[in-house]
Image (tube, rainbow, N blue to C red):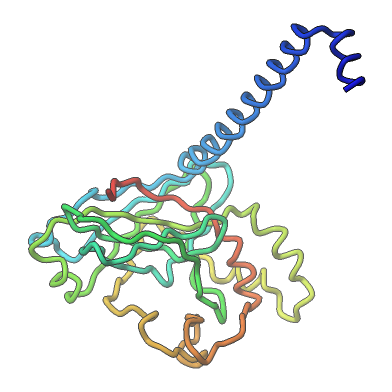
Length: 265
């Protein structure tokens, strides 16, 4: 109490109130700045790499099994995109679930069709459980270039979409060339150069066709490592311990996401 009384005598009550007000104002400004930085970072991510859809909705009765999207690299750095697997799902009922992929984690590219009108769906968060056994073919887009990805759906998907209108949501995961420099430096002790393998897996093309299958490999349980020469899902009972290959480590740096916004309410 004596210390507080001395402070009051020296500064006075009005002076103390002014100091408290200044501290509160500064704290409020810092909070606003932090929120603004988060928003700006997300907007910059959307601006540096952009996605343009053929259409934001499709009619299941007139759908011709093809759908195109354009990825533009507006940045000054090369970007890389893994197109295998390219996942597909539909959300048509309120009891169906939609997983928002965790930010700063690798997730495969995907396209999702939401039935209109959507009564609602169960939303949650998820991450990738894919383990790669080697590098897949990786799309390379140079600075200020673009690539058209033509998705070709099998007939069973066309039948699934019939009689309904669908909103289209597409999510592309990519990495900047600069993101991978440190990753390769940390893995230079391996016998075969991962960087050389990565370089040999790259391709650059203006238009690429990607086949979309109705088969969801996640439903095949359990999946053994020998079932695929490229990757497998770690959902299976035969893969009880966490498994991270050297390829998984490099691919974990593929964590930037670009997507279109739709109203799922």
